[in-house]
Length: 94
Image (tube, rainbow, N blue to C red; front, side):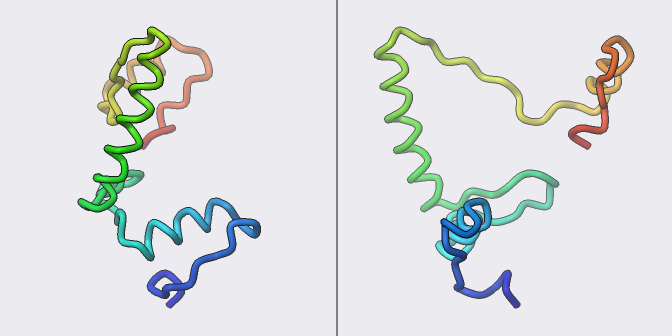
């Protein structure tokens, strides 16, 4: 089964598949039961923390401030948005 093998697609062949193969083979993260989400394992979280801290320091050096935006939006909010925004597809995240 290809999804369980240690084979990693060449980056030059398919960048997206290469990235997902690296995450899978190294065990940095795994699929979540919530569609579109993933569980970042401790080793992956440690790497993410280091990257985030470095980027955060670089951004703050230029005077910017952090902001947080929700990743999971209630379906009722999407339905409400669809009522008053022409062309809004409420099924975009469902």
